[in-house]
Length: 396
Image (tube, rainbow, N blue to C red; front, side, top):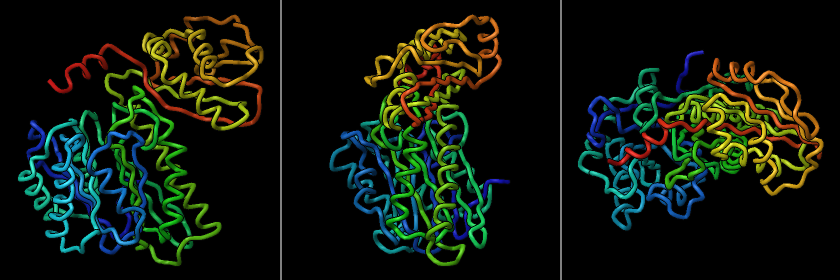
């Protein structure tokens, strides 16, 4: 199914001049033709951008009509001027789209510590408003306008029958400065479902826990991390409840998981997307902590970069996660091949495992414990010399 905006939404992406490269879009606008319920989850970094503070004060709510996003400058660590600029961005959208006050949310991403060039931003908002459309090209342009070091735009969508078709469509950006401590990137998820604001906030928080909180590229939680959910009810029908709400929740999680995976899959300089699964823990919290520890280990990440089935690095990373378990009952598989069973290595052909890692972009790590029934899944990347180069040269 082609990615399409839900009913009642329009989008646009333009080049405003914030980025140096004129072929890169750098300002996006999403508008609903009616007030939408809005929910948000945000970075837990206490050093956060002005748009994060701005949106926190406005969500959850029932009256949002638009989201404006600029890339290239994060509007973070910019003091009172940054707060005023976030408000000015919202006011400009209010003006050109003829909306009411408090109906606009703001997102910014890019270099930290620089002031927004507001003349360019305002001109970009005017241009974007004139190009709003509900077509696929407009959706792609909006997704491109969010990108910083991303190599490709990220859009995922689903349609679910809830007595009539309901669409969920999300767009995201992210390739580095990704650490699993809330949203870990920017995303706008739109739906024409009819939700109340309490359910919208709870569903988004749950979906983030299952997806965006389970990705890591470098363990660095950004200042700007934001995920917004807009539900405008354009599909019709009553406010979702019961089985219909549960079906919608499952669809929302699928879209968020798809978007979440696309971020480390596009990780800066990465040659592998690594999926870490941990099973057999006492609690999900335990499983998450072990999976995160494995995912964040530079030695695990460099081993995968070198297509090296170094099971010792993986098992030891689990062992120092601070979670008690019986090491004599641990099993480990890489790409479905058993390397370690009940606390001891097994005979395997290293070349076969290495070749399987080299042949595929995706590498699977599955750790089996024997402490309970809880499990967790994390997505991360390998660590390459290209990642170091890109981030060493990011600002200069």
